[in-house]
Image (cartoon, rainbow, N blue to C red):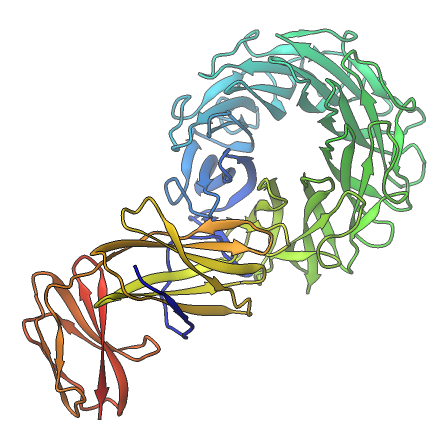
Length: 638
């Protein structure tokens, strides 16, 4: 291989294989089949992608479907999604955890045994990385006891799962907390229909579950009405099907005087214990505040009795979500109505001390409504947040922000758009991509007929990914010309052009600097003096932060045995082409220097091209062979 040169040229190109969209008004369809697809949940696949699960009404009743999305945005399973359960009547509210081997375990509430009367049970399904269900066509029962079972939560457990739920088998309006452990083939490891976690009087509801770091053991928290006049927060530790803290749970918060503690969320503290955050009305009036508590692995609370204040600002604070911090604390986000409907956040350390501004920092406080916050951790501390946002003429969109460990915004004030197509986008979920970005999925009304599931990937700089629209190669004599078109180069550094004779051992030819201009960017690279008969090319797309991704491979066949001859050249009306071989050649085309197709005909022996109607100037004859390789030959029209 000889010296190479680089040229830039505007080209017309066609779209290549599926990639994450770089346009927040386009995004990527996960499922836009008939009927409505809603309530999407996500789990990481272990290779940078995600498995999504959702409720689906394509079959009249509501079923559960799933899809696998690669790290590059490609749908890996059946285009319309894989059915996890299409049993009679409704299946609702799926929850999902990893199975540890690239697949997932999913549990939902199921009305197949209630004949549509709302007498829900708990069922579960496992799906492998290839999209094959593992626990029967419609899943396996977790609990089919009398009464209603609902509000289930999952914890990944050695290719199976631990599941906790609210259980009405005791009758009346009361419910208790039960749990079950399933192994990798879906077999219950504890008592059939679950073991009791709490059967105290009155109502126990909305359980949460986190790992204590051990196999087959967990901490479970819930909202508890045993004191009748108000709900409190209780917790219990379970191991191998047996509870080992105080019978029916330890008190996390029982602030009196109608304080009403509810809707607790929980994360592991990294030391075998847990941190919980709940909505709290202890400060009277109509306000709802947020309080938190830490409990160790023996069931002893670690902070101030009945919890420390996370936010007691005026107005209502609610819909909180939380993640664990690497230092043993937690980051909490919520919808806040102290002035409008905004998104706020607070970081509390392992001792329960707030690390950001008193009553939290504003993640987004732009006018109109911000709601439904979610968050994932950043590598060096802080979090990446998403929410539903109505700043654009009351249309619901999805926005995002990154906050560092000090509480400072990393991206533009009030966030960047993830999805802002002209119809409603809401109820977004996210998971980290491992490099301070995220994969995000949501319910989307852009078809205007029913709801669908869409997704995008957001990079660490707050942009959607660079998109490679096309990458093609043509061979001419001893040269190979590579052309490619990109979109959204907001963080692009350069493209390494790489070549290999065997398609395996690539070496760098040159680096082409990225334009980083709005819209589409077009490139051309000339590899001159090629001596091989077959070559493979690829692009290494490198960002300013050092991250990179490879393009598809292009195979180029270079045939030097028979020379294609164009004559007369220049010509005024008729162009003759000599040495075309119909056995190996497919199409003969005339294109402009910009790549626009002007003429095309099937390859025949010594074809004649009537070019009288072309304007005078420089043109290219493009020969497309049956193996899809191409060659270019210049000529002049007088």
